[in-house]
Image (cartoon, rainbow, N blue to C red):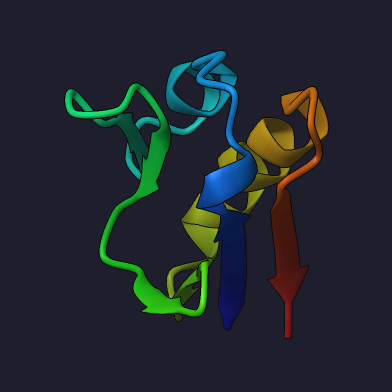
Length: 76
């Protein structure tokens, strides 16, 4: 199971996550911040749990590239 968490309020809109993992992230046209697709929001922490391990590598690349370090990825 791959778990991706995004702290959306702290997003600065750099777009790196969308470039590296377009299947998981897109930019909001409303506020210019990243959106974690198919995620559930729990008090500002947007979390996606997926059994698809093919998303692990792009998600890790997005987390590593994020300048404000608001993306966390776990493989459990």
